[in-house]
Image 1 (cartoon, rainbow, N blue to C red):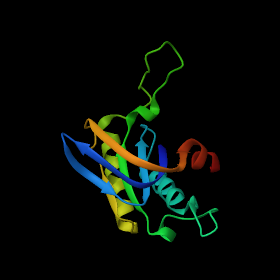
Image 2: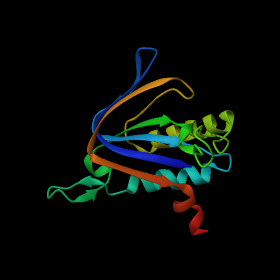
Image 3: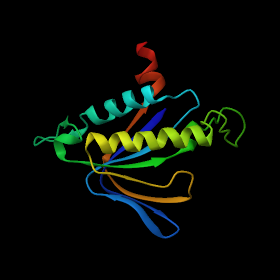
Image 4: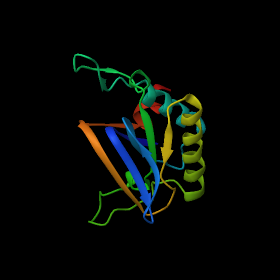
Length: 153
């Protein structure tokens, strides 16, 4: 599983000209899911994301979590995070999870984040989305479950 977390002052997603999700200060998160990912992996990734201290404190130091700043989440499915560009010039996406499995886990992630507390908005799984954001910093973090979760086993 891969999360690309972008600290933002605002972000939104449109599908067919209609806004499906919009947030103020918080994280716009692109989510890629592989076939090997599970709800257990998702829980660990969510926990890590929400505990990251990547927001500036009163001294400008990255020392505050999303909850510390009252931040919101915009979660967007992004199978292209599993693009393999090693051979040729056309990416392969065979490492991306099958659509049914990925959608199930994406919906699980959305549900869990909503239950935990921050306002959680979304795009639409599998749709052609137009994503807009004002990235603060810019500050972007990539969490990969192969590094975050599986390496600790």
